Length: 255
Ligand SMILES: Nc1ncnc2c1ncn2[C@@H]1O[C@H](COP(=O)(O)OP(=O)(O)OP(=O)(O)O)[C@@H](O)[C@H]1O
Image 1 (cartoon, rainbow, N blue to C red):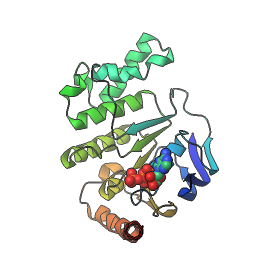
Image 2 (image 1 turned 90 degrees about the vertical axis):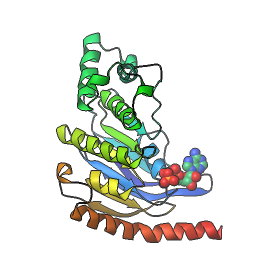
Image 3 (image 1 turned 120 degrees about the vertical axis):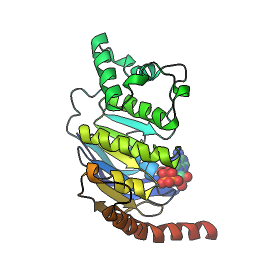
Image 4 (image 1 turned 45 degrees about the vertical axis):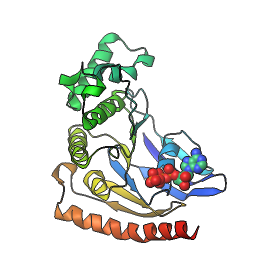
């Protein structure tokens, strides 16, 4: 299944937040979305996930989701909403409870996603006993448990300290390398975008339009923080963003 945005514009009341956005989310790739504050990145994600309908244009799901997909479009947010009284296993099981699965299938799925996210040893652990990064891994395990066709990730690292973010980047890279998934990943952080994105979409200031789309050919597993090719790409992205960010600040000052 692929997601397509066709000439999507969106407004809240009199505020236009997105303007004429057309985009295809390729299967098996991570697409990063960057852009100045308030340019409509989260709105774009909500439209992709069907939480809101665009004022104009269309959001299309092309093709069927994978047969095993229990929830084709699944979010991972910055605030992960783990239930504090449930263990790691209990939190992952939560999303499977409405699906009338046989106990052995639940067990297989839980074991699989905990292994993929390196959490097998922490099955019985409560969220409060885990670090912020580990908790975010539980949220990712929970998202993977429903075999999403597309994971919609809204700044999943923004509540984490920089070292933990770095570790989570490594986690996501090895997760994708072992078994590719499709994701749209909204971030403020250009280094994350060049580390994770197969493609990077740069939005203009509000109303967000597609300013540019960069493709990074280097395999995820061969990318590392500070690699010259990634630094170069990051500078290129910053050059694209800088003018937009400065103009957005000026507009705020001008009221
Ligand atoms: N439900 C809503 N009603 C009215 N305005 C909204 C609503 N949701 C978002 N907005 C406005 O739409 C604009 C785009 O918001 P959005 O959260 O999509 O931007 P963003 O690029 O994700 O921002 P940030 O980078 O700061 O997280 C903002 O000006 C925001 O205030």
